Length: 155
Image (cartoon, rainbow, N blue to C red; front, top):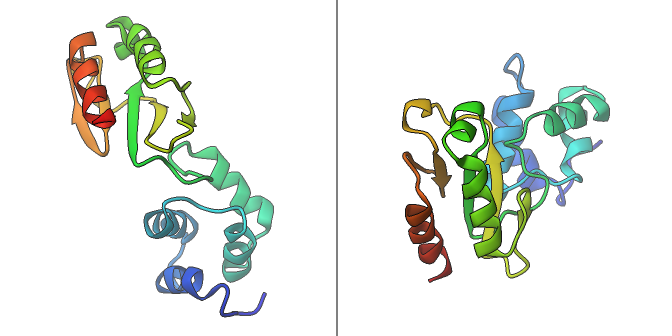
């Protein structure tokens, strides 16, 4: 695939990594950082630049849950669903968040305000249950603290 004006922004993100071994993951991270997600249209371009198959790129992109294939909401609330957090009440907090935000896990609310996602360990098992709101870690999450976080999102 030739470099085109249409792909220029994507090529600008990809170019610094092309000579690095194992460049696929750094490129996917860079594309997501630049555009907020990795569009399906980027897959053939990335595959071409790395001389990989589209299936190779698609496989890595879909294997890691942190890669988004659609734009996220203005806020991203991730609730830990790992065992330690589940044992400390995470499932109740997930149900509370889904009800308060009127959106199920793995989705963005229709108005684009928030994306609600599970995360499978934030490394805060001793402070379970935990969450991450817009990159900020929250440990020892309670129903009241979750309500406060959600009130801040909706404000």
